[in-house]
Image 1 (cartoon, helix red, strand yellow):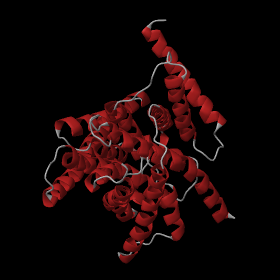
Image 2 (cartoon, one colour):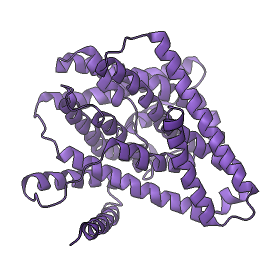
Image 3 (cartoon, one colour):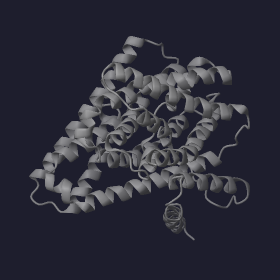
Length: 399
């Protein structure tokens, strides 16, 4: 069999596996994406130890960031209700900006103590685990009917905080890996400039694309979808390569402004557009979690108490952030009910972004293997544990 035929056979087999898993586990408390991650772990473990002839599957950070994330971010961003978003702007910005910075400390400081590693290195790890992941969050939210306001806070946080986390991670990487001096004022200015400029650039591109389609005389549905796909990748590539900004935030802003600018009839009637984006998002999410599983299975894990401690630190950091953050929001006249606070805790999942950032660390960095092992465990266990807890919590509240 030629290499091309083998590649095609692998792609067809994986697509069948994805559809089979999603069908079999459609009513499972654990999301199908989590099952795909578990299957990916089993595949990589079997390939390493028993079936070396099977092809090894490894994703590079560039493939995840450039090829996969623009689709997932755009697909999620197009569903954001702008009226709800404006109403929930305060908590979304609070949790996606301050929450990321606070989570870096809530995760990094305890692990520095328990793991016995330098504080700056531990904070560097915390910056990679600070953001909730849109792929992980969307895989859970699709299975539960939540109120529109809390669902948009959850989705908005997971979408906006990815760009914030990337910016924070880049600053920490410069300090830890390159020995850059810490200049708080300069870092804050660069941080603010990157966030604001990325959102502005994406908004301009999205609005421009939407206006262009409105001026196009009677474009068919395939043209409109193709144009939106071009916009998703262009917004990322232009932001990252031309202006050195956050491609993720640019794509998010572009998707929202695009959906606002295109004609109202298109938003309301184009089922092809929505269904195709939903399918692409499902496909990319599935591949992403399977690939995370293969990366997890490709590593030998040190069986220490530190793995359990890391899970506890992650959960505790989310609990502290949500409860203390909600008290602060209440002080500025924005109240989040206790039930919604608990939902924010149970949907605070990590995912592909954290793995991607840690895979970018050079091989010679002494804590790279430890950080990867900790991150795999901190992603997998909440993804398995929290959806059943969320289902039980919601059913109890309804009864």
